Image 1 (cartoon, rainbow, N blue to C red):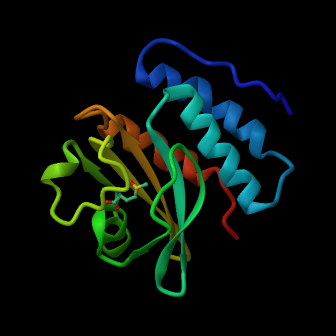
Image 2: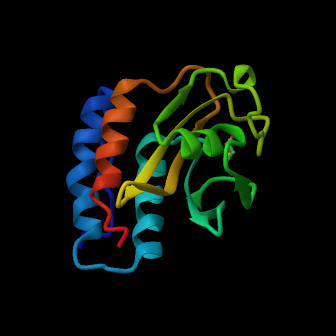
Length: 158
Ligand code: SME
């Protein structure tokens, strides 16, 4: 396994295209879910320099903070609460261009301005979410949705 990530420049698409095979390499041969989620969060954070990247795992009908990169965050989120809880409840990716306009947004940090939350499915149930926050407004679009969903699909959540 290569231990250094090669950081790509260029379009968002080019950056994801460079990152995906590297994430595949990082995951290869490792079966521990926490280790793999930690490296996925780190790879995304280092490539894109987002404010916060991390996972929340569904445990006893709550989202509980999992591996992440960035400032300290809320540890538990109930279904339907905030962008993360809404993504879990609706079982779909949510792109929020301006978090202050999202009803019930949970501000772990006032520096976070836009956000994308991608649910992770196992046997058709949401078992985790990937949350990405930016300090800039309007940072996420369908390209991020496409690639982040693809990256999540690389992880074995079994
Ligand atoms: N803003 C999220 C909470 C999680 S943190 O930003 C890390 C939300 O509204 O669900």
